[in-house]
Amino acid sequence: MLENLIIFAFAAFITFCGVTHVISAITMWIPLYYLEGVVMLMTGVVSAATAILLIFIAPRLMALRSPEELSAINDRLAIEASAHMNTAQDLREAITALSRSNRELERFAHIASHDLKAPLRAISSFSDLLQQRHAEGLSDEGREFVSFISDSVRRMNTMVDDLLRLSRLHDSNERRKLTELECCIQEAIANLSQMITERSAQIEVGPMPTLEISASQWVIVFQNLIENAIKFTPRDSVPKIRIQAERVGENWQISIADNGIGIPPQHADAVFDL
Image (cartoon, rainbow, N blue to C red; front, side):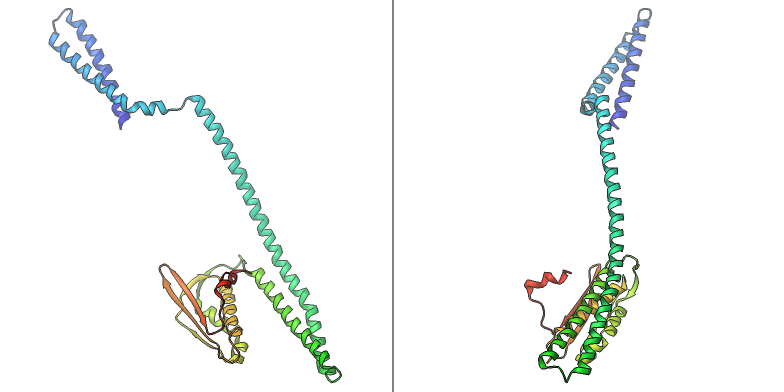
């Protein structure tokens, strides 16, 4: 807007200057002194207005870069753009390498779980045969040792299963889709049916929302929480578990409570470790 006014003022000033000179020349033959005075007055007014407008635009003019400065800035921007492109390329390569590493880790977990479980099955089978066929020939200490072997095999089986679950935890192949959370909970309960029956566990599930989720991962979450709740409830108590959902703003808050031993506050952060 200001620039347009200055252009208009300059044009008017130059026009009035030209008219003033023309009238001065005509006045040599025709006395147009009053007209000449009026035109000169108008020229002065336009000249003053142009000067005032220049005062406002002068800081902008002073801030304009010289061609040399603009060239230096362009060179610097070109260097920065090249550096950004290199960084972006490095990032893409790092993402590709990480994806490949994740796939290799998952393959390793599958292979390791299969190869580790084979000798575990053999150890378990032979320890069972030892107990069944030679229990009478074993001393109390021998039977205790066989029991230790069986317990260790069970623990190792659990560790191998956990390794396999860990490798699938960040599986990006499963797409999120609208799923009733109730279905994930019921699947987790079905997976733990034997433990639930043995402990006569009572599980209360409130109304659940339908969410866009990775269903298999939510099944793992609920299964681990329910299993821990049953496992860490004293044997002389009936495990009671309550699962609820509450809308909090734009989010859903899922809460799970039980009558087990709980977790000391100083160890609460460890819940989120591997």
